[in-house]
Length: 257
Image (cartoon, rainbow, N blue to C red; front, side, top):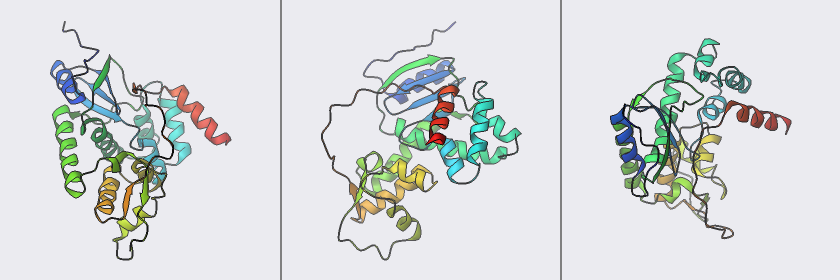
């Protein structure tokens, strides 16, 4: 039996680690500095990153699934890793719509995890995401698409800080002739929100939002907000998947507020 590697050196990037795991046909979760990639039989089935809205936020904020319907699916299907199946079986979402939304969220999160190719941290064999299987994608396709997106965004405006830092408007600039989508994106720039938060507020795919924000930056309308107060160096983040009980507690706390 092939022994699956579970830890990685500081010189091994997330994409390199995924290549090894794909060749081994591994199943589990690979944690990186910017997110976590779930594999099944060497193929990518889900990706999470704090820099993108999760699938639940996209579905509920767009109106595709009511909030109580989403949390019902989490409550009933999370422990069995069948949240996606619950959404479809309950009639709240068609299988095709779920697949399209899932793939969009997967590639959005993969851009942050892979495009800047930070260090891989650890692999948990056998770990399964609570959403359950929806659609798998070959590792090389995910890596290639992440690189393509990075190249396109850099051609628009070569400053990756736009993707992750809070954004502010440049004062004294004319915004009268902006296209509708770009103007709508600009209205969400307030000096506090990041690209992910703007995408979530607009119920829009993160990559599409990044394209508009980089165009706004290239037009001299938006820039990364300077830090208010210098803080301590952030600790390295080790990504892990939340359990269903934690999700329920968060839901209950939000409802109480």
